[in-house]
Length: 114
Length: 114
Image 1 (cartoon, each protein chain N blue to C red):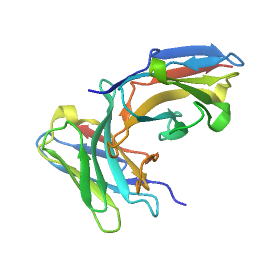
Image 2 (spheres, one colour):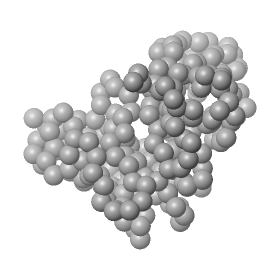
Image 3 (spheres, rainbow over the protein chains, first blue to last red):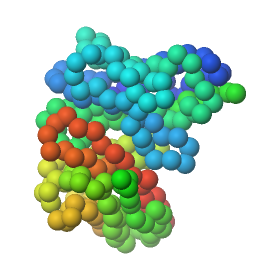
Image 4 (cartoon, chains in turn cyan, yellow):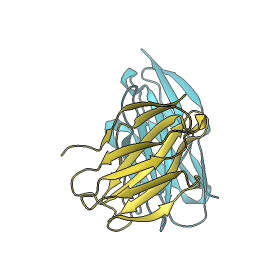
């Protein structure tokens, strides 16, 4: 069965530190890749997505992610985090042809200290 | 455009009862997917509906069912509730007329089974 692994359960950073959250998936075929964010008390929001083309994708709020097909990875990055980035981040994969089924990682909680 | 709405937002039920949750997708979206979110299992796909037809289903028992109406609104039903059904139930909508596509999530319904 397909699965998504997020390596870090909880990451604590100070403001202005750089961020990289790991995400790996297990599926050899074509996939669509997503990062979602859940701010405290809010619902899941789409941060960025990769469908095809340039493997470096940019999302909202200065986030970017790089798809490395050979490593089955889709890591999320931000050069300088802010306190307002405190949230839970979910990596998700949709297998091409599988309707409506997003396979999620367990999530990474990011705490940014002011 | 209004986002995905879910009703009710909170629900408390007793073991053995049944429950119906409702989801109204973003205007123009024809696909609705349902997910269960728990601290232990994370986000898990329940099923997806498109134009009133179930196109995909996750690994949940038959007590979990759903339907979609001609206006794309969807309901999910859980019969014979168990304590383990306590969770946040999320619905997501998308255009889904062709892959790839992204999903937009609602705020969820928090179900507590006592």
